[in-house]
Amino acid sequence: MPDFSLYRPKSLNNLVRKLEHIDIAEAIIPEDRFEKAMDKLKNNDFLMRKEYKALLYRMEEINTAGLMGNFIERITIFFKEHNKVYYHLKALLFSYYKLYKYKAIFGILKLGFSVNKQWREEIKPIRKIIEESEDIIDLLKKINLEFLKTTTIEELENKVEELMMSKDTPMLQAILRHKVLVSLEKENIGDKAEDLLYIIENYIPDTDYKDVFEKFLLSKAAINNESDPNIERWFEYIGDKLGDPYGLGRIKWKGIDEEAIKVFQLWRAGKNIGKFFTEIIGDPKRLNFWKQYRRYFYRVEYLKEYDKALLMETKEHLFIEFAKIGAMYMYTKDVLSIDKVEQISRNRKKSFIINNLLKSPVKAILKEDHRGYWQFKFSRQFSYYNYYIED
Image (tube, rainbow, N blue to C red; front, side, top):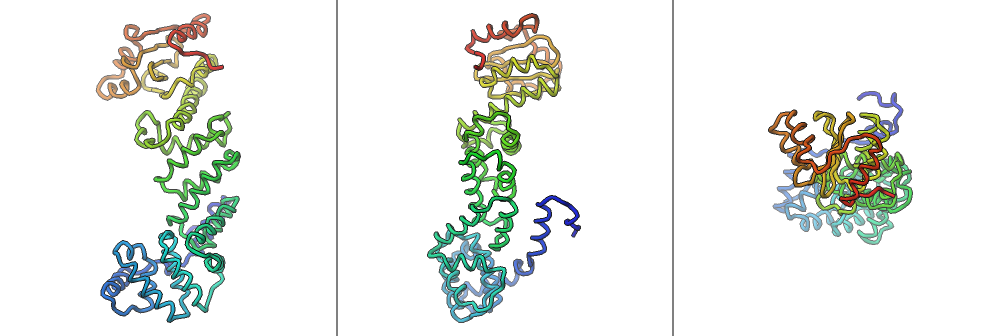
């Protein structure tokens, strides 16, 4: 293993500490031992101590096989007959964090922790919580509270280690998803952006992203975004994970509230317009003009290969600007849209796309040059189609 202590980031230091802490031999059960124990469980044969331990580590599979009731009865008898079951309790904890909603497990947790006589310091925190819990719901609430009280990533990861949890267990994922959602209801989303995004990236499965992202996009911080770098990180992260709601990524956005999608697209439109007119061509006049209309655009794409064109799409029209100052073209959506450009570009040459689609005065309903007081001229023309400058 590389000497991670040479590097300063906390995440690496935390990682090496956890790697040193884990006794892998305890968590990996040979497959043949588990299969042998399962066969004995099915046939109601006598089980050895090590076979009980193997089964305790993999109770999910026992449940799937429909043998949970039988196993609960047998492990209950085993715990009542033995008072040195420390490593069996560690195995049981491993499964509990996966099957945390299974009520019968609470009973054997309480029993096992009450009969064992030899303890190690590492299990003291979770032992205390289990002994003080009245039922499985109370136990979940107490563990959840432990994580809600953490204020930094370092504290959180120490808590994961302290409670002898595994990063990919459903219980931990559910608890941390709840922690993120609770944090999103508060006013310090920006201040906690780095920590919350770290939790999402490292602890929350992709299947649970949508609820979290929707919660953020409907928050005041997102709706009233004023170029806060921390809020920007949220938008960028969501864009990286889900893509364009109206482009190739639209399937990933299925199920997310339309109002949340509008908030994201407003940000994305402003971002793409700003990048085009500042970083790509450096034209503050056109930037300031188009930013006034960004609320109408639900999709903005930059097509570098097609004469550096910027396509800005509303519900009814497509506006096209080019890096080189010349003419602005405006089309109705039934004539030209971003989807149509992408579809036709698969089979036609670049020159055709530029000259026959993007720059077609015959098909366009407006073609206006950037001459004189062009801003006033553009605005007046746009008002005929119910596009007005943002107050």
